[in-house]
Amino acid sequence: MALGASQSAASSRRVTALSRQLIGQNSNVGGELRLCLACRNMGRAEAARAALLTSHPGARVDLLHLDVGSARSVLRAAREVKASNVINMFATAEGLLTQQDRVNADGLQEVFATNLFGHFLLVRELEPLLTEASRPSQVVWTSSSNALRSAFSLQDVQHAAGTEPYSSSKYASDLLSLALNRHLNAQGLYSSVICPGLVMTNMTYGILPSFLWTLLMPIMWLIRIFTNTLTLTPHNGAGALNWLFLQNPESLDPRAKYHSLTSGLGNNYTQPRQMDIDDETSEALYGKLLELEKEIRRQISEEPDP
Image (tube, rainbow, N blue to C red; front, side, top):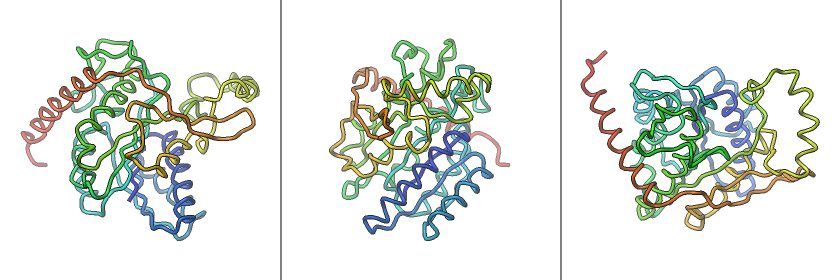
């Protein structure tokens, strides 16, 4: 089963684009693929499932309600997943594309919780399914070209005192992927990082007024001749995820970020680029996340039953 976690309409469309590619590839090799779309907005999830079944009537597509910004939702969803079959690939879709932040119901910074910690907690819960040395599994983190070392601090991993929570959370996902490989490769779990490039979705369009995008879009198509990171469509942005699905996990570079790229002629390809990360920082972050996990679990366990 391949599971994709989606928090927004933008990431939902990218997961849908990836799902179409996976189903198509799976049909070509004659395998049996079961997809599980884990989404916060079940209305969008139903629409995505309907679109997939329209184009691929024989596909197996399950839905799972999941809000990775809520620890309780993550733990509840994990119990449902563990009752199903083994997971072959778990892709994390980007949650909040914003540099604005606030504290959520769990007492965590919302961007940190949605873009990093919720996914970490889900992976921790699913380790029994993901760690079978005889049957390798993949975790794929959706990162960004905006994952900046300068935005991240080990003294403030939630970025509560900073002004770039999105950049910090994406750099943290790069670090965490390296740590997961160090700790879990021997158990059959392999972690990778992708960057979808600049994909035009409702999240992207919301950054500027609509009339400016009308003026800019023809220019952006021209700029793509010189800048291959302007993937622009969800289909193109899902290229690296699809490419990773077809690879042997053991052969992938744990220090590389796999970029979805589109040439000026519209040809899609995937390219690995080395990340600006180090073992010491990644290990320190991993330790802090484990401690935070213990604290969150303790808080939840002390709450009265509903």
